[in-house]
Image (cartoon, rainbow, N blue to C red; front, top):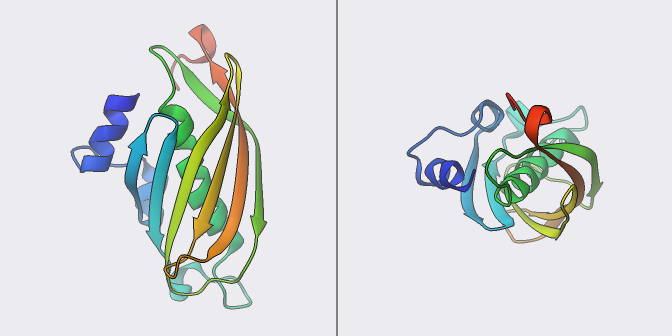
Amino acid sequence: MRPFLDKVRSGELEPPPIMQLLGMQLADVDEGRAVVTMTTDPAVHANPMGTIHGGILCDVADAAMGIAFASTLGEGESFTTLELKTSFLRPVWKTTLRAEAAVLQRGRTVGLVECTVTDGDGKMVARASSTCLTLRGEQARGR
């Protein structure tokens, strides 16, 4: 999985469709760590109150956490998310989000990943965590 992620980061391969749809970029990836960025636009991403929709913050955090966890996978392994929790800390309008994720615990089957999302001024706007389940064999086939 790591060679694929490195090629996405370098631009040699296109990112997954959801990252393309939302305009996310994989800024950095290393073993158990990832940084995803995204420029927000209230004309496209706003909720009814005029701030950036919380789902956008969840998406950028989920992408970073998924990539961080995927960077730890071995040959023939895949994963799925069991739980995703996001705390929204301040409103966001037009800015560049930076989601920095790190794997805190990587067991044989279950892993825990955390992510901090900051705005263009470096202020924390959200904090997220994810519990991931490693899949092998038949469970991982086709994923």
